[in-house]
Length: 204
Image (tube, rainbow, N blue to C red; front, side, top):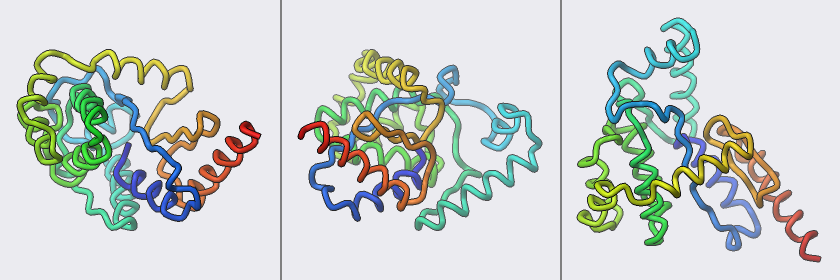
């Protein structure tokens, strides 16, 4: 998930009449599962290679993303963002979920990547971020070292494949409605309302 997509969803949720009945759960999805823990080169170079575009086109695309994020009050620093494998970060999110801290952990990881240039494929960095949101540092380090929650990450990814999800952000509401991309809050609100109405109809 991108941070501005999360902000737009949160904005929609604040306006949703039944927000107190909504449970938000973050699921794992790796855009580049074959990446090394720390990848060389910057994001624009990687984007140009992946999609066969020029560096100028990649720069323009990033500029639009930065502008969109600014509209949500966020200062993206894609120029210093550090590429890497996110599998271990997803494992920590599953740990955080067992402690009631998944939302805080997700927010911290996104900020670390999009605005602070932290290497979120690095175990020491991940342990530090986990500790910041209230997860015991030694427990986080043990989870990372032992490979815990790896199967949960793979199960999330298998489910994403079954649902036809190919990118993030992607929101699944009541397992009936899917919204792809960082859509405007108004569209997200309509999806929330549709999901609620379908649930009410099914229960009646």
